[in-house]
Length: 108
Image (tube, rainbow, N blue to C red; front, top):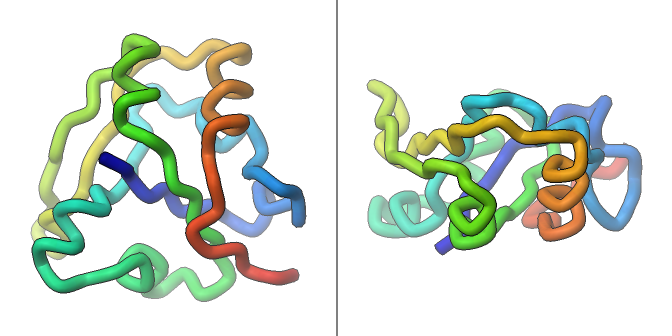
């Protein structure tokens, strides 16, 4: 299972992977790819209103294996909203970045 995480322009440095600083938040907001697919939506849903953003894909299994709680936290306008909850040390942030892949990389 995967989750999509929007990446602002400042963290999209044109690299092969996102900046590790993206993954610092103890309640990291993501969207569940599986839940979006069930609704007939794709990654473009995550980027609505954020045309300058990129989108990274993270594996839920990786997050859970590293002590994170991954839970669906639906919003009024986004039933696929999911939080990745837990303290992310700098070392773990780097691991998240290393394991993340670009689902959409916005060119600068």
